[in-house]
Length: 420
Image 1 (cartoon, rainbow, N blue to C red):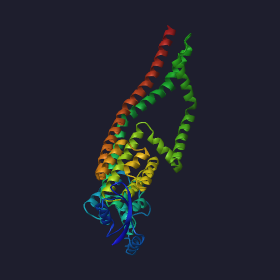
Image 2 (cartoon, helix red, strand yellow; image 1 turned 90 degrees about the vertical axis):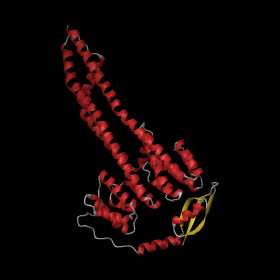
Image 3 (cartoon, one colour; image 1 turned 45 degrees about the vertical axis):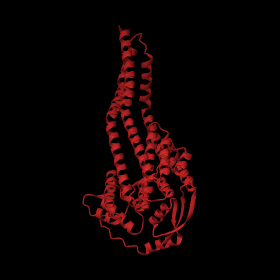
Image 4 (cartoon, rainbow, N blue to C red; image 1 turned 135 degrees about the vertical axis):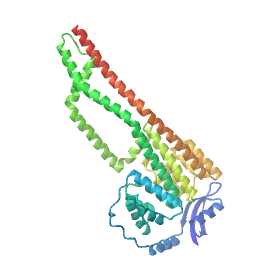
C-alpha cells in the first residue's frame, strides 16, 4: 500500500485536503470518486515515490545493439511518415500490446522505411527508463512540441492509444486541408500569373510604343490615365531591381523577427486578431483543448494535471497565458467553468457546456460534445475561406486588368481622333 496526498473539490464546491492509503494511483482516484470528491491534485508520498523510482532504476534493462545501417543523429520524417507511425502505433496499443512490444513489431515491418529506425531508437530509450514523449523529442524533430506534449498527456492518463488515434486524425485532417488549399489555389494562381504577365507586357512594350505614338502625333495630349501608366512604367523600368531587393530584405527581416523567441507572443497575438484566419486559429484551439481534456479527465487524471498537460500541448503563447490563469484559479479551488469565465477568452457556449458537465457530474461527456460542436464550426469556417479565395482573386485581377485596358484603349482612341 502507498500513501497519497490529495486536494479535491467536494459536491458543494469547497476544497478538501487529506491523505489516503491505496495500492496504486487508479485505486486512489476510485476511492476519491466514491467519496464524491473531484481530485484537483493527487501525489504519492515522497518516500514511496523515491522507493519506486529506485526500484525502476535498479531494474533497468540493457539496450539492444542496433542495426549497423541506422545513424546516430536525429531522424527526419515526412508528414506522411509521421501519420503512418501514429496510426500503426495507436492500432497496436488499442489491440492490447504494450508500448515496447508494439515498437518491436514495427521494427520488423518491411515497408515502413525510416520508421523502422525511429521505432528502434524510441524503444531503446524507453527501455532505459525514459518516457515515450521524451524519446520522441530525442529521436526526431519531425514530431514537434505539440505532438510530444499530447503523447505526454496520453502517458499520464493511460490513454496513449486514444490520444495517438486522435492525433493521427488531426494530422490527416491537416494534410487533407493542405491538399484542398493547394488544389483551390491552382486556378487563382494561374489568374494571378496571367495578370502579372499582362501587366509586364503593357508596362514594358505597349505603353512605351503608345507614348512614342502620342509624341509623334501633333496636338495630342496624354490623358490622366495614360500619364499614370507612363509614370508607373518609367518607375518600374528604372527601379525594378531595387524593388526586388527590398522585397527580399523585408522577407528575410520578417523571418529573422519570427525566429526570435521574444517576438513569438506578439506574433501569436496578431494571428488571433487576423480576419477569418484568427477565427480558425481560435476554433482549432478550442477543439484541441476540449478533446485533450475529455481524454485526460475520462481516464482518471486529476483536473489540475489535465489542465497543465493541455496547456503544454498548446502552441500559441497568448492562449497558453489564458490557460495559466485557469490553472491558477482551479488550483485555488474554483470550478473550471468559473475559471474559464474569469479569463474572458473562452466563448459562452463552451463555458455553458462545461458548467452543465460540472453540475451533472459528467464533465467528460460535456467536453466531448463541446469538442464535436466546435469541430463542426471549424470545418464550416475552413470551407467558407476556401470558397472565398477564387472569387476574391478573380475580382481583384479583373478590376486591375480592366482599368489598365480601359486606360490604354481610351488613349488609343484619343490618338486616332487627333490624327483624323
